[in-house]
Length: 322
Image (tube, rainbow, N blue to C red; front, top):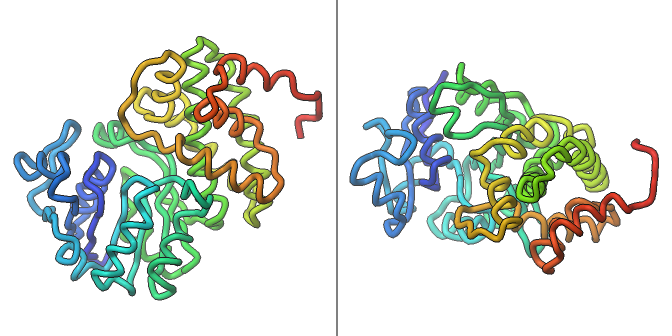
């Protein structure tokens, strides 16, 4: 394995874990976070967060131009709605050629655009973009529990290079074959996670089986309409991520849905809250029915009563399963 110089942007739990994971593999890693970030301030003081300790080999930086100056790979793990702004900062810092890996899930809320599309628009064709997606929580990885994930890119050489450099006994990477399907599926599973949390909050958890089945089916229809492979909805980036999203106590999206149903405040980032608006925008543009996603949007944004809205799905016209 050729050692890579990698800058990880985003010092939350996932970004910090990735920095540790890649440093443990022997790569030269810099972790970037804004100086005003409480996470970065804590890491500077102790090199620890609530879940892990960073090895001494990981450099910490609060200056973006310096952090990316020698990077072979820039890996981004931030909130999806912040990506376009960050790309503008990267462009101003002179990053217009190289490899970007998006280890984040979502859609741009206003446009419904995939995150790789935003990178291409902002940074140009000389930046090769890949996505690192699939199931797995930091809490489990830190306990040594392995999982399977996907790396995908339209640039085949980049994809192969990343999988060779990033694979280990802890994370088995598969070669992605459908950027549209993998990005849409990864983003949409967070919306299904919120729906699952709503069911938990209303003590309707046995409906999760139907939610998973029908949720996957509607996302498969959308992927196909967008030009992707509908089978991607049944892969690691969507259906394969349901255990970590629909059932896990570590899932922010599921926990947010449960808190919402119970009327309890929730302050952690739940990407599905933004993603659902992007999905509904896409569905309208491509005339695709997304009954579960539209119901979640009605509950979150239009004040629809959660129980009545979800149970109304049972009143839809009877039809064949497939």
